Image (tube, rainbow, N blue to C red; front, side, top):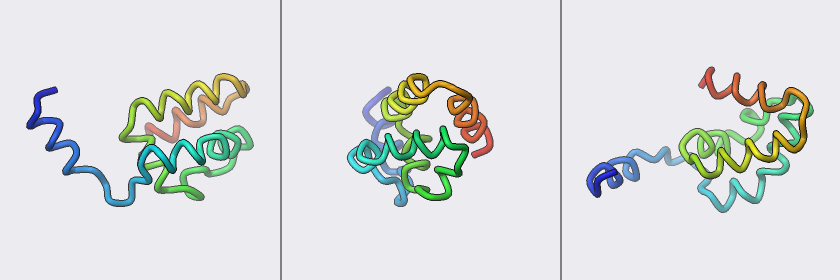
Length: 83
């Protein structure tokens, strides 16, 4: 990514994005909601927006969901396609 492309992406950041810090604080809760088949994105929209934009945080969530097991990972993947 060039410097100007990185700047463009930063400037396009959704103002509702929670940022990495808040997303990390809520990531276990978010994963638990997904595992319980609850609408985590509706409860924490700012985290959902962040996870859609931040690859490293999304990978951390994927790891938590893999550890939880069940179909939580599939539900999250489906919700990502819908957004």
